[in-house]
Length: 267
Image (tube, rainbow, N blue to C red; front, side, top):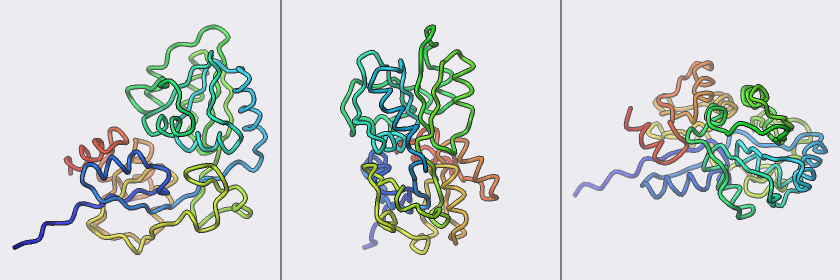
C-alpha cells in the first residue's frame, strides 16, 4: 500500500509569534507550517517621539489611529500603549493580521478596514477627513512614503511617527539587544530566542512565503535550494524580489490561507 504524500510545507519568513492567525489558517487548510526568521524588529534608538504619540492618543488628541501592521501594534505596546482607544477616536487597520494583533492587545469594536488590504486600498477607500481632523500614523522606518504622502494630499492633518525599524538578522546594529521586540509582546527578547529555523532546513519541495521587502533582501542572501517556490505577500515584496534577481513564482492577492491556495493553484 502506497503511503500518502506528506502535506505541502509553507515556510514563513517571520517569527512564530508574528503570524499566528495566518499560521493557524494554513494548518487548518492542510499545510505544514514552519518559520524561518530572517529579520528582527527593533524599537527606534530614540523612543521618546513614539511614547509622546502614545500619550497624545490616550489624551484624545487624534481623530483617527491608522495601523498598517501587527508589528506596529507591538511597537505601540512597547512604548506604553495598553490598547485603549478614546471614544471619539476612530481606528483603521490595513488587514486581518493587524486587526487580530489589535484584538489580542485589547478587545475593542471592529476597526475600519479596506477591502483591498494595502496602502493603495486605504487611500482609495478611507473616508475623506472632516476639517481639522488629526490622524496618527505610526509606521516602520522602512515604510514606503506613498501612504503618508497620499493621506496628506487628501487633506489629513497627519502625525507620522517611526514605530520600529527592521534589520536583517545577520546585520543587526550594535546595541540591538536592548531594542529587540519580542514577536508576541513587545518586550526585549534574548539574543537568538527569535530564531527557530535555518536555511539548511529548507527543502526543494518547500514553498516560502516572503512577507516583506526587507525579508526578501535578507532571504536572498541565504543559500537556498534551486527549486524553492517563492510566494510574495503584496506587490512591493514582489518588486523587491524581482529587483534582487529572483522573481516571485506568484503574488498573493491577500495575505491569507485562501490567498496562498489561490496563488499555488496558478503555478
